Length: 302
Length: 302
Image (tube, rainbow over all chains, first blue to last red; front, side, top):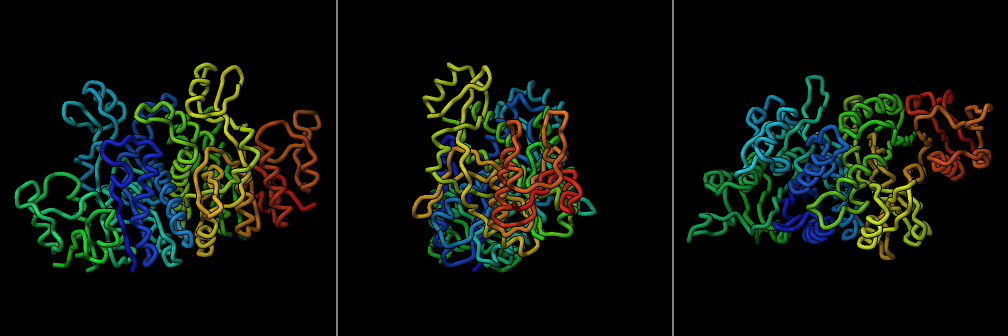
């Protein structure tokens, strides 16, 4: 089987942990221990989030007096792909010494007419006082919004439309390599009519990119791995219960509290509806059990 | 022909330029324009320096109050591979739309018994006052040295002994991909007796890594590209003259002023002595002319 597994941001940095390198490398060791059994029996592609890591680098860049202006999100995202890709491939090589392993810098095309660009919603970078941020925003052409009682920059979160490096990734998979790619949803780029790629200030949801990648690679299974055992029905009520098996139509009909579950559900539903493949959401620690159907939430065609 | 081309640090950031992303992306466009003709007719592997970029990130990390301690050099080097790799692959794809292009996160093994670890010589990171740096150095177990009238951290620059990702790189070359790899000399790692890789605080010379990579890949040609037209004989004297052709023995016998030419000369001499292949040093802008022998310094077997 060809399996695409998406690691949530918390796989690398748990809530409340400092973004130190040694803490994250320790978490990577645990994550790879959960994924290595899949790689022993299957083709495996690993994608990952980069929210906390790109936040650290964005803040550092914004405070760097040697720069005329902070690095844009495409460049910062590429830095996190290098960083997290390195941690993952090193640990994969250590735990799977007989396998080829590669981390590929990955660009994801978005449509520059995507309506998301007219309604930026994704908070990025540090918090500021309103007056201070208004001054910076005018200078840098940023859109800003209130985040509680402080202000932050907001950027668009457009739909991924194409993974630039999918041919390269397919080539490596065909040679039985474990591939780490599409970190942080891929570096966001737009494509001109003549095919010219340009980085863009945006954040692409990593689960939606992962679903698209799984489709482009003809994957048999998509595993969206996070820190919850399963999708929970009636969350926060006395009737709360894990969902073991659900169709895409049923899943889309359930209301969930605001948060990160929305894109995960969209991602698995898209993959199942478009390909009929196996898809599930569950805990990273249960990765192997999710694949055999004994843990997590299995999402079936409607 | 299989050609390995090493881009000098100045290809991305010229002396006196601010390390802004847009300035470097503009320089990448020029660099790729010089390299694209080689890729049209040959297999091409591109390596690159990362001195200014890792310096920026090291300083940012050292000043980041959210971290318990700054990121180590292996992690920072990986970030620069992501950043520069992204810039290069995007521009390569734009100038060579019909080719596969890939940037691979690359680790380079060094021997932990390398005598360089007992005599760190390579300045890294920001300058400090002596007292301030002595306090930090005790806390972080750093070796420090005077750099002019200020003080800086020094780290080892050990010999590269193996490129971890060379099989992956070879696979991509065999599929006619242009490969960007081994940025900054590769992420420095040591290897235990049982093959376990661990990042290490060191800086590997990018030209020596490039020569080793060229040898491991069975390359036909090694081009060390910089901002001088050729190696200069009797530099700084009235007899100064560019060397057009030289044997490895002759080249090793010439004394050059201290600076970055030493590792370039060691790199080309090693490659030629070990493989008998084509090697030359010259200006990035002349890349194609260096390959046909009309520009640069051609280095021949003794």
